[in-house]
Amino acid sequence: MKGEDIELRKTSQNEDSKHYNNFQFIVNKLSKGLWMTFICIMMFIIVGAAILVYFFTGNRIGIKQTDITQMTPTQIQSIKAIGEWEFLTVYDEEIVDTVRTGFFGDDELVRIYYGTLRLGIDMNDVGNEWMKSKGDSVVVTLPEIKLLDEHFIDEARTVSFFESGTWNDETRQRLYLRAASQMKQRCMNKENVMSAKRNAVTQFGNFMRAMGFENVSIRFEK
Image 1 (cartoon, helix red, strand yellow):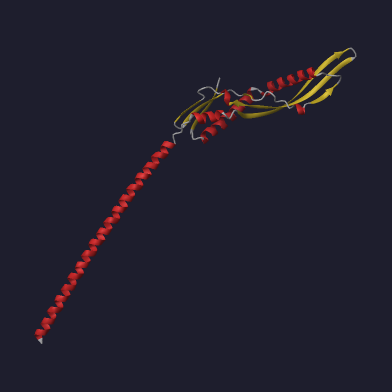
Image 2: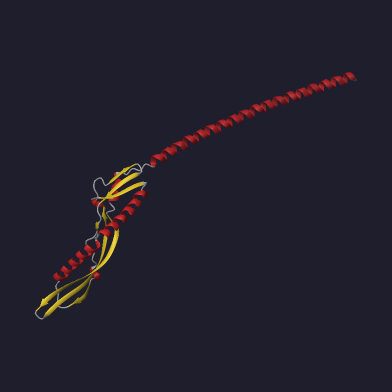
């Protein structure tokens, strides 16, 4: 009986040892598999990060190059094609009269004229090098402020305030020209011209900044 117990005990120990060895083998296999999986995951992460850094760096360089604004001849020509650019509107009215002496008395004609004078620039008047750009900076040289329309009197609103006798078209035309001259003298003064220039600097400056320039300098021809 004792021999059988010893034999059974040895057999049990051998089986336990065999199971332990099998378990150790499986653990080793799993450990190697886990390590290989871990290494593969890390390699995938590293490669993926390198690809992201590459593309991110490339996009960033592209954006930096795009920030450098360069005006093409076509864009410059399109700005010139704007033509007249109004920066100040002045409303005026003038009373003009004339007297004609006659044998039986004097005839008088008094007329009231209304005008709308538009002050601004004509882009067709700019010089050959009116725009110079470098990087994010641009220098713009504009033509002098002028009266954009010489026919600023609203003849439909012109009325005769007082009229005695008979007057021909030639006399009325002379009154019209006198009224136009007085309006121009009154409205094209230094204060109004300076006001138009300030508006031009503001509006044209905003226009150029909208096109991508950060530093804008506006000048006027002398």
